[in-house]
Image 1 (cartoon, chains in turn red, cyan):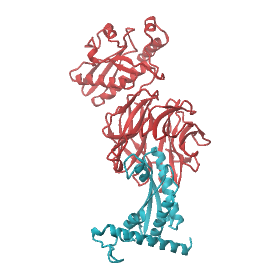
Image 2: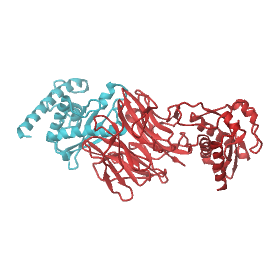
Image 3: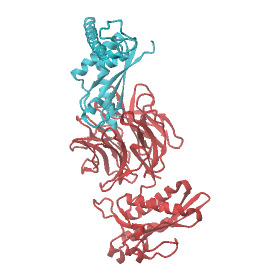
Image 4: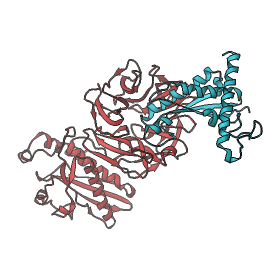
Length: 440
Length: 173
C-alpha cells in the first residue's frame, strides 16, 4: 500500500509542480489526443541478467517492451548501437550525461532473474534530462512461459506513466483464423496476445465461425457458428473451451452478438423472413426482449460503457446508417449523415467515440465519430477494411483488412484514434473479426 | 392458383426442359449420347438427363438467381428461372429445398448475412406464390462467407450475389 501511495505522490509532483529543470525542457508527457506528436526518444538497454538462467529472458523482455512502445507511434527507440553507457548492474547510478548525449529523453533499465521455472523482472524508468526517476521501480513475476506478459506489464507501466492513461499491452484478442482460398475458406476461432504472439485455437474448422466477442472480463466469448446448419449465437468459456448455443429453437438465424458492460446480457440480431431485428437476452434467466421492430435490417448492436444506450446499424432510411437507442429499445436517433454507408458501430470503452466501418465510392474506411455523430474522422482507407474493435484504453482500434483479387487474404491491423500509426499484427495465417479483450 | 394455370405452367416447364435437353445432348455427344437419341433411350435415371433428378434441376432448369448490388428484388430473368424451379418442385413432390442466400464481398459481414436472408426469403416467397408448399421449403443465409467466384471485380461479384435452391430428398421418401 505504501508503495502505491509513493507512486501516486511521485506522479502528482511531476504533473502539478513544474520544477525549474523540468520546465526548461518541458514536462515528460505525451498527450495522446493531439493530432501530430513527435515520438518521444527513449533507450532500453538489454536488461541485466541476475541469475545464470535469465540471460535470454533479459534480452527478450527488453525487446518486447521496445516493440510495444515503438508500436504505439508515440515513442522512438534510440538504437542500442548508439548507446554510450552500458547498464551492468540494476543498482549502479545512471550516467545521465551519456544518455543525454544521444538525446534519449527516457531511459528504461531492468533486471531479470530466473529461479525454479519462475521469472522475475524489475525495472526503473528515468527522466534523463531531469536526472530523476519517473515514479517508483516495480517488479513482476510469472512462470517462464508467461515471460511475454511480464514484458507487456513493464511496457504498460512506461506507457501509463508518460501518457497518464492506462496501457493496453497486457491484453488478448479473440479473432477468426482463416486459411485456404476465398471460395473454400476454413475458419477457426483463435485467441492470441494483442501483438499476435501465443496463438491458440478454440474451435476446429468444420463449421463457419464468425465475429467472436469477448466478455468484459475476458472469461467468455460470444460468436456465431453454422454448426447446426444455420448461423446461431454461441457462447464459449475461455478456460474450459466448452461452448453451447445461446438460444434454442429451430429455423432461427441469430448473429452479431455482443455482451453488455456488466456481462449479464447479450444483444444480437435475429432474422425472421426478410426482416432482421435486435434482441436482448438476460443470460442467467434466458429471458429475451425485442428491442427493434422496423421491417428493415437492424444489426451490429453495441452497448455504451455505462450500459444505458445501444448503437446499431439499420437500413431503414434506404442505406446502412448508425443509430443510438435506449438499452431497452425505444426511439432511435440517427447519428451518421456523411456520404456512403455506415456499419459495425462499436462504442469506445471511454464512452467518447464510436468506431465504425464506412463504405463510400468503392472504398472501405475505419473511422470514429463522437457519440452524437459529429467530428467524423476516417482513420484508414482500402478496398476492404472492416470490423473495428477498441483497445481496452480506447486509444487504439484493431480491424481486418482483406487484400484484392483471387489470392486475397485477410489480416489484422491496428490504428490509433488520431490515425497516425497503422501497424499490421503478425498472425500465423489469415485473420479477421478481431475482438480486443480487457487489460489483464 | 387454378388447376388450369398450373397445368399450363407445367406444360411450359416441360417444353422448356425438352428444348434445353436437346442442347445438352448436342453438347455431350462425345460422352456417349447420340444427338439423335430419342426420349427414353438415352436417359440415365438420376443423371442430368433425367428430368426428375436434382442434377437436372440444378443444371437444366437452373438452381440459382442473381441480384443487383444491395438489392433483393427478383428480376424478370430470375422469375423465369424460379417458374421453372416451382414447376419441378411441384412435379417432384418427394423433394425438399433449402434456399441459400449469398452476398458479394462488398459489404460488412453482419449486414451481408441479413441481406443474404432477404434474397433467400424473396426467392422462397416467390416459389410459395407459385404453389410450392411452404412446408417443403426453408432458407438460410451465408452472407459473404461462401463466394463461388473469387476475383475482386463486378464479373465475380455479380455471380456471388445469388440465391441457390438446393434440393434434398424428403424424410418420407
